[in-house]
Amino acid sequence: MKQSLRIAIVLAAFLLIPLSKAAVAQREGTNQASPTPNPVAKRTDIYCTGFIADAAPRVDLQVIGGEKENSRQYFAEGDVVFLNQGREKGIQSGSVYYVIRPLGEITHPFTKKRMGVYVRELGLLRVLETQEKTATAEIFVSCDTIEFGDLLKPYEEMTGPGARDPHPLPRYAEGSGGTSGRIVYSRGQHEYLSANQIVFIDLGRRQGIEAGDNFNIFRTIGRTEGITKVPTDNVVHQRDKDFGSNRYRGGDYAISATHETNGEVLAKRPAIPRKVLGEMIILKVENSTAVALITRTTEEINIGDFVERAN
Image 1 (tube, rainbow, N blue to C red):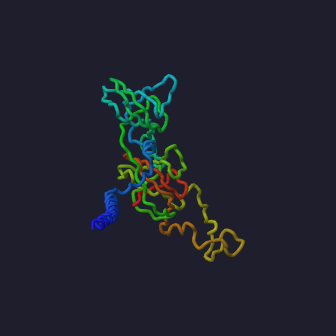
Image 2 (image 1 turned 135 degrees about the vertical axis):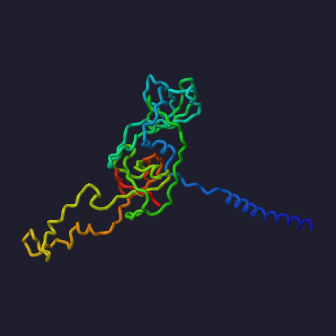
Image 3 (image 1 turned 45 degrees about the vertical axis):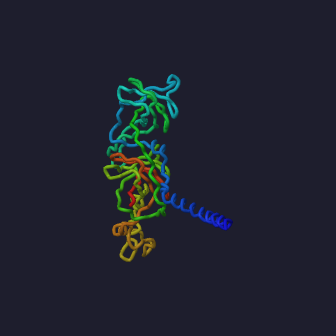
């Protein structure tokens, strides 16, 4: 009797253990949050894009010195620099700042209107110690070399937007009817652009643009596309009612003339689809401009190509 009881207990334990493990796994799977999509841009990439501001940034807080400044002019990640303000102006240890450098006015390349001041982002620094009138800081992110006179801007946390759901990219499309603008500038002043490059568009907060918005990049098809022009075809179409040539008398009929001229066809044709060049996602937004990352392309993109917010 005792032996049969022991066998029953062991058998019950053997059956219950897998069930308990399955219950725990199911409970953990229920409580586990769904994974977040990978951002399309790293944080350091976002910090180094630059931006176009409405007005020139303040110049009251800046870099005024650096370690070993008697033998070097440029500073980068890991270097110690000195600031022109300290405890007297409320600077605190541990504070983080962007290092920026305004480079000049930007004019819209097509409308010729003022867009703002282009500001390059050089990196991030953290205040180590404060003195009465100065502060000591260390550069911990470097986008470019930092020099005396570069300005500081209070740090704001930025995260890269998530990638858009994968979908086929059409070569030609009618458009979504969303807010539209143009690519007006690029980081590094490149005119010919491809995927993973940073560009600036002439849309911002005033047009309701937000970080994470997706845009399609397109180019219209027609006489305004590109720099080449189709020569006039009036010579071919100088003909009488029987398609005979009025200008050239070598034969009774013009053997190359079509039924209608190009102008007649263009005047009455419906809107044709535009060429889709790629997609981009907004990283930063100012009042009248935004910074975007080109995520994928179907062909080379140029300054001046159009963008439209995707639905």
